[in-house]
Amino acid sequence: MARTFTRPKIALIGAGQIGGNLALLAGQKELGDVVLFDIPDLEGLAKGKALDISHQMPVEGADTKITGTSKWEDVAGADVVIITAGRPRKPGMSRDDLLDVNVQIMKDVANNVKKYAPECFAIVVANPLDAMVYAFEKITGFPKNRVVGMAGVLDSSRFRLFVAEKLGVSVEDVTAFVLGGHGDDMVPVVPLCSVGGIPLTQLMKADDIKAIADRTRKAGGEIVALLKTGSAYYSPAASAIEMAESYLRDKKRILPCAARCDGEYGFKGLYVGVPAIIGKGGVEKVLQVELNADDKKALDVSGSHVQELVNEVAKRLA
Ligand code: NAI
Ligand code: 2OP
Image 1 (cartoon, rainbow, N blue to C red):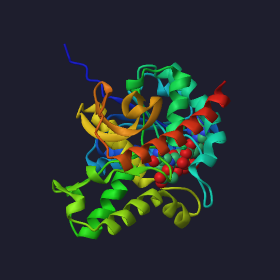
Image 2: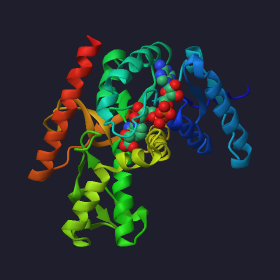
Image 3: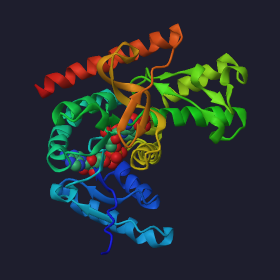
Image 4: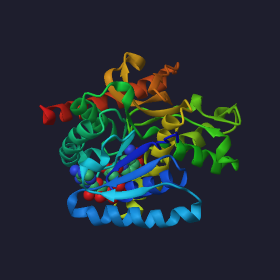
């Protein structure tokens, strides 16, 4: 009897700027078959992008099936769901300004994910990130290991780039962890940054490290100011795909992501950026690392900001 092979199914909710790039990267990496979903008014956008990316697959040598849809039935049974459905910010807006509109969108999306993909590993990308992850978990009731938010991989990648540029070394050799909420008070944890295994503090002056940390905190805004019509999309897509790949291939990468802390770092039931192991069990473990007093204080400040946003979301979900 012929063996039956099933490829993982990856549903991308939101076929906008990040959604389209997620589909492209998932296709190129042959992570699984991709369903690109958007609202009925934008069915053509989802279908058109899916078709265009499908046409690229022979060039890539990738046998990935990519379809576009506005029907939730097509999302049924997805193994991984990545949610970018939501408005991006425009110049002058903070991520927090998106809360009202994006909570409403999340209500629709989370209820449908719960219905059609109840066993999925869900990666939330929409902003304000940490509060949107909370909203998703609250609405779906999914266990915490199957709900995570993408921000830390991106913020850390930005920090890594700036360090590599300043030192004139390969980005490959720079490891960094930016923790806390995905806002202007995110916490680049300098003692966790190393270059070829050498602590960053042995290679760079404190003033230069501070300048890089500041630029990292504002890097999303730097792009918004340049694009004028929206926010970053190539690097957020690549970052979410790194998380999806770690899950689907059980790589057990240690990635900074918005995972639920139940006691870790002193947070209680809060989704916030922390180092976590992502493998076939989803968020398999939040790693509790020792922080110095300054970083601990900065993480507390960032966490209380996330808590304020979560309180606002909770009111809107009540
Ligand atoms: P976009 O506007 O290009 O795409 C969003 C898509 O979501 C649109 O096509 C829209 O029609 C769709 N959508 C809206 N309501 C929907 C619903 N109910 N069901 C399905 N789809 C729906 O925006 P972009 O640039 O892709 O950004 C998406 C989100 O990601 C924004 O909230 C943005 O702030 C956030 N973001 C998060 C980052 C992070 O590090 N976590 C980084 C960059 C952006
Ligand atoms: C970013 O960091 C806006 O969250 C988005 O690029």
